[in-house]
Image (cartoon, rainbow over all chains, first blue to last red; front, side):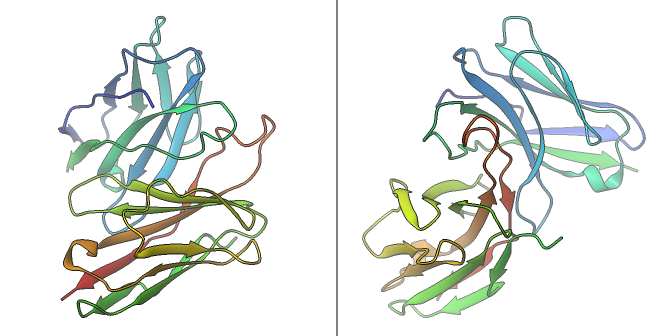
Length: 112
Length: 118
């Protein structure tokens, strides 16, 4: 699987937007960009995924660069419950490439 | 609805003992995954089932690790002759089939079993 690069940690103030970056310069044309987050003492939780176009759901937005070599997860209004480790993962779309390859992610701290 | 359930939540064993960790996936999910998460690291893939078939076990670290899913629902991860380096959180995830066959469906994780080997 192609590799992603994320900052080790970020801080944000409560009730402000958060932009979490991810670089994936070796992404292939069929790789989807997935984001998961892991709250303390819990299993990872799916956040959002996309291929080329920007995506929105109830949790977040995903902005994908035109060349697809980077993406940004956007939390529009951070709350204390958003404090977690956020993982950016590339996942091939071929049958059989089912597993998720996690890196070390970005630890997001929310400041009250 | 019920999510992925793992038991026990915590397990302490002495070095050399055998342990068995259980995963109850979301009903109807045909894909099931096991991951191992060391302290401060992201989860690492161990093995993958599609129904009862184990299609990928490339991540199992040694032949002491064995996973099964005999009826295509509940899965058990067994570790024989445990060693201290086996101490980790073991996560189970399941996913449903999607429109484009199996790919890119979200994986739903349980909260894991924290295994401590003394």
